[in-house]
Length: 438
Ligand code: UDX
Image 1 (spheres, protein in one colour):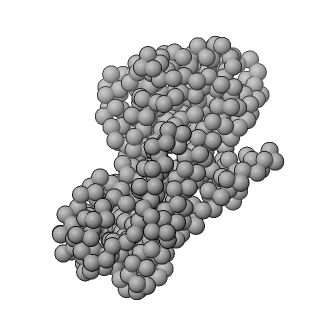
Image 2: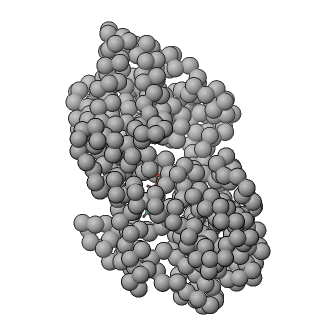
Image 3: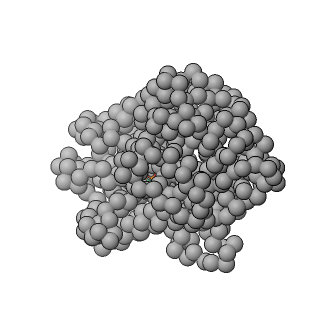
């Protein structure tokens, strides 16, 4: 099957490469010539485990190609995926659909024969109707079916998520489109990947409801963590105790510094706007957004408290900058407000992240980037674990202790055991658990 993928961002590139790996012939289109040039030369615009090899293999086997020319790619395709960005519009939190609509006009002008236009980008309820209207306006004669097919890929595990999905949601009531989408995902279907057909608006809402629910789960356990700290309980045990209940489930119950990334912050805001437009207050989502923003802003205070309030002139070593491990994505990362607040209070901030330092450099200034965790800790007054990269999970604690000027660790991801920290004589502050003192 011939597929065109419009947009080679995170979602488009992963989806395009995975569909090519299934045996489809995929042309990825992007307006940015530098990005396409890089991809043609085998350079990935993002860090995602396994992606570079997947792209290289499918390019070599001639199932995957890259171009800036939208029209020929669309003309030849039976299915055209829209995977352009939908950032939060400045000021009002609405999803900015200008890239989507721009691409749709170009697609409409180029389609030939029956074509399924699939929205992969996360778009508010009703966008599919508008896409369809636009296509009719530009090309009243076009034989096009507009489908919603949201992505549920986690950064850092996107290829695995694509190939072993919990479900594939396809929003269409058109039989020809259903058949084409069945064909696109046939390899997964054979693998028992459940294909769920719904009406288009329902599919659009499923994406936002899923992300808002997950964001709520994280925020819930974060607030319970605060209570655990005051009440002398352990949030990891509480999470395990509630997570073993099948109705609750154990995933997304890791307390931490607050959620970030490219999806949860923007999708929760966009869902709130949709609620407002329809006159339906979404008070839980509203609380989640407020609680999470406040939480991220409060994390620096934990570092300051661990130094008994004496932060000015102190050197803080941040381990991890990305919003989560296995990605270089800095979007809405909790590390950003932490760095800004610490610098504001007169601290010197150093950092090491296995992948995100280049990205961080674009957002943060005045940070001393180091080449390894130990280099970062050398001579620092406190270590702060911000992202739970595997390489931070088994540091040589005696070495850490000898490198720091004083044995103080603030662990915002709870990756160490309290008894280990106590044994090694650290002052150790984590999330939702009692601290230890030397
Ligand atoms: C998310 C959704 O999982 C995915 O389905 C959707 O398509 C895009 O958004 P992603 O943003 O890559 O994926 O990351 P995810 O692993 O879901 O984590 C989101 C945020 O929540 C991160 O900041 C993470 O650190 C935080 N989180 C997650 C926690 O703090 N605790 C948890 O238990 C889980």
